Image (tube, rainbow, N blue to C red; front, side, top):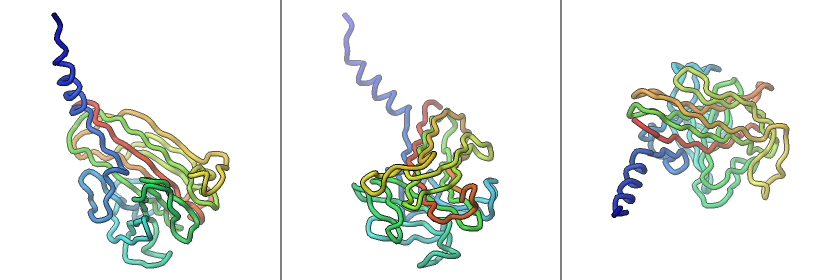
Length: 222
């Protein structure tokens, strides 16, 4: 007679093997690096991994927290590129009420000189990983950005965001490409990186460019 007691054990084994790293669930406004996540920016207008720099300071609005390159309390040098996070359980307005991030959404914006806003996942163990990302224009002025996913220096995904694709209760959905999705698998060695990047787009200005990101990295097998 076949007994079913082994099924829960099998499910537990599969769940342990498939380890999920969720950008939103893991987000920290205190620690950088934050375990396997790093919040930062490019020193120049380049996606070369050598250009990556860690953000140094945080700031906050009600429910919205920020990482910035250096100390700054207003837009300008040191404020951009930024990374923001909505810790609330509902959509909240961002800076100057010009954009809105959904619950658990990360927001990114490049600098006006072309420095990228960057978030990196650093693999602690080698293996095959599934990577998912959804970039969305969330600025009411209609975001116009370039977004990317990279494995170390190799591009896995490149797209342009044109429009607004966020919470329709805050602004109507519009634009030629308000969101862009990536789904793929990649083999990572220890300390390899997967980078999620947001640039200032084809118009080469970061005006009204806030772009949302939901991302997960799933370890499928070692």
